[in-house]
Length: 455
Image 1 (tube, rainbow, N blue to C red):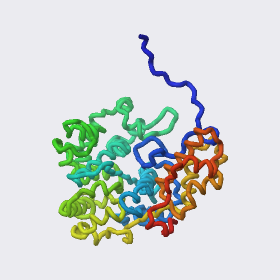
Image 2: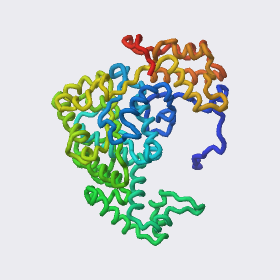
Image 3: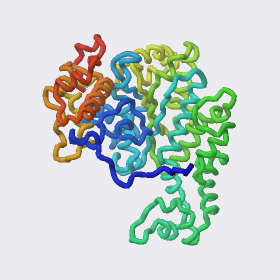
Image 4: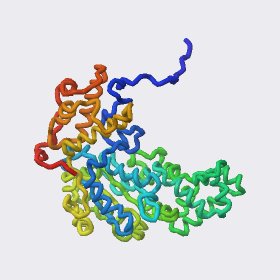
């Protein structure tokens, strides 16, 4: 039997959404934000910032403070209305991703006055955690640090710091006369400029050790091998899941690695500070017993706001926890006993809290338009509701005062998919109602029906 090899198509196939004026389905079938996804519908790239302007403004006042960065708050909360179910999908992760993208695109140099560097580290718990809570939180942060590009940027900065000026300029120089700091990571270029990669790495190690990094950690950092080092601490060589009962060495070290070694490493590379975005906190705390919650709160305070680690010595990371009222209820008592309530009270009315309401009808429309615009075949149509008609949009949003973003996006995906299947070019109310049988209610739970959803 002849072997048939896979073959890539040499030309793009027609999009089933072409009749709708779209290049692809604009809405996610599974509307859960995943910052590591390459799909813009899933990773938060499509973002209607105007719909949460008040929340963005308060976040900036508390945590960005471009002209007063050292005095940003050290602990803040991002809230959504609702319980553990209705409080999901409101946009907390998308807002974190928005700020993560803003800062990490050039490590804060265009974000902050004076052009200094900062970094966002994203921590999430896709599944519920049942033990080693603070250690798993720290390990999740280390995994993100291995993925978000900050290690390469820092290593290049450190090489630049220890290399002779002329040699560094020769390595960075491109043939077209431009300079690229990424070239500093290319050992072949370094050798061509008369340098010795091993000697440069040794100088970086010495620099890091002088700055407070353990020598056993400084070596893999200097060599660009932190991920390999973390994998070497596990028998299975994996980074996920974060906790394996028979293999805990990396968790035993995770707090020190993050809050001492990595803080000192980033400071050595020129970073002024950073942010720990701790998402899905309910997956961390839901299964905790009372005693475990108190212990977690004390350990969290020690790592993030109280003396004990380089992180708190240098006020390096500001922590932002996403939560909702049901999740916070299980932590509020522990927060008080650990003394954290005096630093940042754990409730939506706290000065350190940013709350995301359910979008109003007009704001929901803006979210729909932002997704449509990303996939327009004709850029001149941007800003319009096409292929929806006015009554089609009204039917999609069901004329509710407030809507739930996740339910709305899921419903929109079903409607556009149905219209494409029927080869229709316009989506009116009749089309929406036909696509949504049985109709999925867009309304938020009863207790939010009277809430003004404007941000």
